[in-house]
Amino acid sequence: MMKVSFHGHSVVMIETNGKKILIDPFIRGNSQTDLNADTVECDVILLTHGHNDHVGDTVEIAKRNNALVVATADLATYLGFQGLNVHGMNIGGAYEFDFGRVKLTQAFHSSHYTEANQNIVYTGMPTGILFTAEGKTIYHLGDTGLFSDLKMIGEMNDIDLAFIPIGDNFTMGPEDAAIAAKWIGAKLVVPIHYNTFPVIQQDPNKFIELLDGVEGKVLQPGESITL
Ligand code: NI
Ligand code: MN
Image: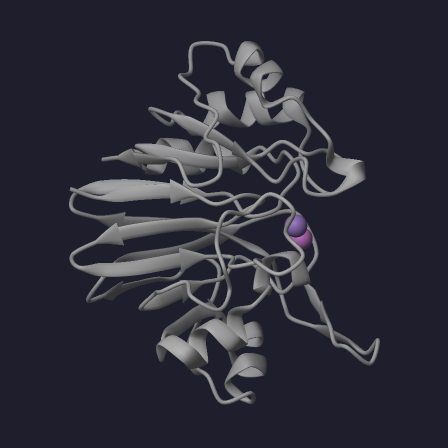
């Protein structure tokens, strides 16, 4: 059995095969999270892209837990320079890790990390993540606008659970996210990337109402789904 929990913004924790896999651990400054950056435990961190609201506390959490960090080659190289144990990948590529299979997908967005001294480091292409373990596939869309190849991703993969951004402004809003949900054909969709900042205020229940033939569920920070 796989336990998948939501922790506010785009933070997702997957527990499978005795391993804890943390996606986009933005904890400090995340008004929606129930996690504590000083105590959260993980074996692996998966990153969708380099924006600070996704990389978040990766450096500190990875060092304290001696966790492996998986991201695009560009972002992985940057984080490797900071002493982290990294595994670089790129869009369309999959790798079978001992904790599960990771495949990076396209996302239509941007990707950079803003350092404390206001220096901007571009970190390659943004991605979504297809994660497969125990015969189940989870699709974390990362940050993205609506694009038609989501249909192809849906046709090529049997997706059990998808995390879809609905905040608008930086990503899809609820209407486009409902179309994405239909195209990817997930058995269950969970809205993410909303209410963290003033410009991404949304009522997630309105997104659920917009869903057409797709099951959706709003998760409160800390709530989980068992697959
Ligand atoms: Ni972003
Ligand atoms: Mn974001």
